[in-house]
Length: 415
Image (cartoon, rainbow, N blue to C red; front, side):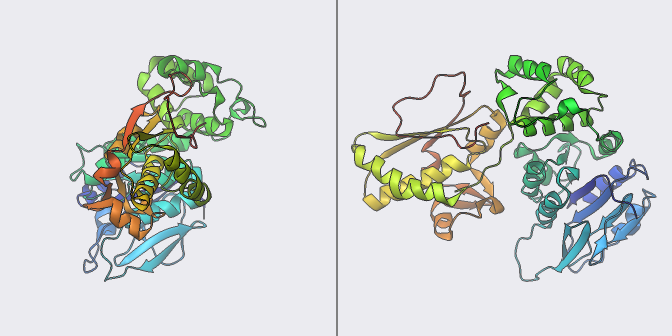
């Protein structure tokens, strides 16, 4: 039994069978990868997907059982009435609660895949309604994996692909039939990278000055100050995805391909954030800092806050909630203006919408969820009052003029 080079989790719902057929019909038998398909199935439906897919591929298809070991060059299907995760290279099943409302089996599996496979994980979101998968890809991305979404124009139902693309975390948007070529390219790329990619201690990377120069010229951001391990990992992944022989060839690709330069730029800027991340500093802000600010601000003036490096908006929204709670507790009618800035335009667009998936609200109390959020289909939108307190804007902290007359500055997501 051979260990797969990559484990590819594939989420599919309505219209997903056609997409799966197009994907596997062009997938070679010997990629060295394992494919795990998570699909939405009615509990009363007898799945014949294994029979249907076998008409389009000669790759062995296995309906997963408890403890099934994932092997290279196999396709694994989730059985009906079950939810599935992967741990230590084995698939584990749990009964789906028939009384449960909305379930998100794709997100559930993607989260476990990220933790189990790390940078060997690939998450693919195919045709389907709703937004299942869009939460799980956050974890795959965070652990250094690859995220692919079906082109919304080719998907029979584009809800799931669009929801994943709106996160700004998708590396490639492709038709299902074009995905195997990318996967084969990844599988054939040697993973014993040249030592010039590797950071020594915490010093800047050697041999990537040309990459930094191109990024700086295009986006006016000096990435030489970023964490060496992050830069190394992200460049390695992009080199593999474009099938470059070495770093020199990749630099030439960047010079000629503005889209590839943009994809690398997006990869380097992806941040990890969440509502009320780290309870201790938020507790300090709530109990010590905000009361002191309110004591110093006259009724006629506004409280001004700057959140630098706001990413997808969780931190400024968290601060706004704390301030509005403090205003209510003190019975004060104080205006609040939070300037939430970042250099990543896609993250800012996502943040400004103020719409978040349920699993991104895990650190919000039920009381706050009820007071400051409204249900919007299967997601939650920040209340109008809170959203009106925040101005999202693109801003380079190292280049642009700072905001002034501020009562509080936070910069927890920088570098």
